[in-house]
Image (cartoon, rainbow, N blue to C red):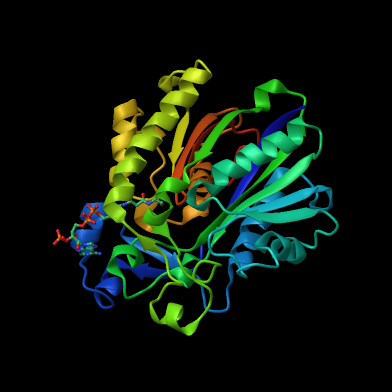
Length: 334
Ligand code: UT7
């Protein structure tokens, strides 16, 4: 049995936070943000719109496009760093409840911005082992809920959104997810971290006063490791599978910063038109960034049945990974 990516879907909240809005909130400028990151605007969920709502809407679209009945889904996994609840219930359980999916395994994974690549690996393994047949994977983030809007080094970067995919069992090797490589190194943990509200810095007034509940990032140090790691990821997976860069129909890297994407793209000689670039309109949506970018390309008719996609992600942990994935869904019809 092989695992096939049958569909993609996404959900983008309607509220737009522009660089000019941020100029009124922290000491920054539109010019600085565009020059250093490529980001022009990002989406922010409504106060009463939570991570599982975003994930649910993306999942609904992915299920509709998959041709699979909701009742045939036998596992739901969500990657998120901004879950509905800190410990339980899981965001995947909340999404399942909203979809009316009952009596199947539902759980979250914590792999920050690499979450969607980890989910690919997980879905592939569960299907190839014959354990599951139709798996719903979701990257959903209401990152605005863990961002300090007084910290200009992080608040300009992130946005909310969700992406989802349905991965199904197939006997056709030509439809299969080809390979996934993924890793982590906790030695870099402190460079990108939400220090508060866990067992290290529990929910206590003194910790909250120090704003430890919000994400912190040593941006410049993260940047350097990200470029090196994302480049190596691509070289490794292409070499392992004897595939050349020109065999890739669409390169979909994590959308954190256009300078990182450009550095990796140009080093590996992917033409501009074969590289996803959505960071300007969504900012960094962590685990949702790759499926949101994939969905946009799909809706633009740039990803078609049989196309070979290369995913490449890097994030807190540090975590990183790459995936060679065929699009095994139906072509978009407008
Ligand atoms: O998704 C997970 C992985 N995350 C990433 O990959 C993000 C990686 N990092 C980055 O994208 C970039 O490092 C940033 C966009 C976060 C920062 O860009 P940078 O070119 O690395 O800038 P920097 O941190 O070295 O800061 C340069 C200057 C500093 O001022 P001085 O010390 O030169 O006077 C900062 O204080 O820019 C200042 N600065 C800002 N100025 C205006 C930092 N943030 C801002 C800001 N507006 N928002």
